[in-house]
Image (cartoon, rainbow, N blue to C red; front, side, top):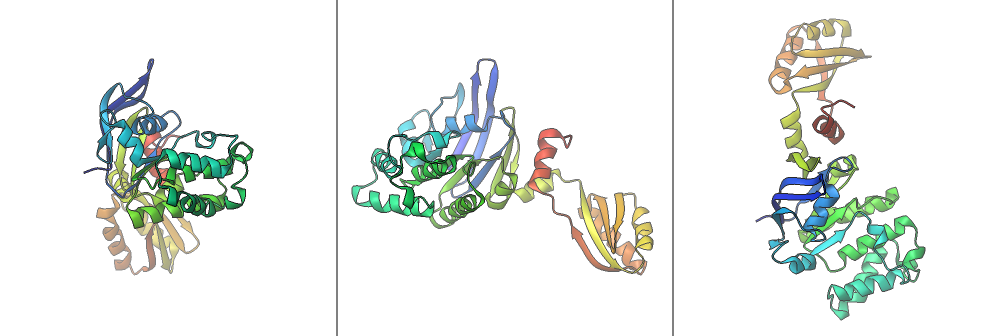
Length: 313
């Protein structure tokens, strides 16, 4: 069973197709990252999954509850941080009063409300601001308060739209640590929209790239690399004559490019799984002493650009 599942989910706004036949499969306990440019359909997807919007066609389920047949149950077991999360408080209430109010709406037991609020506000470094009115908090602190609200009732699934936006680096790091800890300890599922590619690469188990309402590709980072990568850059460090080694490397038709950096050679190799061993054997047979033959890591940004733009930027 999937913690989040959608089948041919579609949502339009006039002539604009925001979400187009979306099929998602997110396993329980997974940290899932949805990536895409502005207007790709990320926020609309979260609004559909959280029942803030209803689809034109198709359906979805969250923690086994159908968004159309049982929207109240979906809301009960999800924690939601919408795109405008830092504007979803009651400005005239204090930070503590906001959380107390929402805790009652979520039916958090009375004997746990204070402990839970104190725990979350302390974690987000907001306890000393608990009596400040929400409307007087900074943008970053309102974002932290919104995250506290999403976590209040210990939901099974968290739908987070840009959870670390407006946060300083220390606060963003704490949020990433919180997500990893909750997923590992309690098996909570996280569905995260983010523009922060490095962040997604660091914490997400599964990734999907969306554009113009369609999922272009999905899988783990390593799976995406295996699917997309037909050539890869390698750093080859040697002892001896670099020019001699380059002449051997250049002679191979599967080498796209090669250049020298002091005692290191940077070579772009086609189909590296097949050809790396061939190249290493040629160098060793020619008497070249290889100190290092290492892959230059392909980042999530590289993969993202390849999928969304075809590498043309």
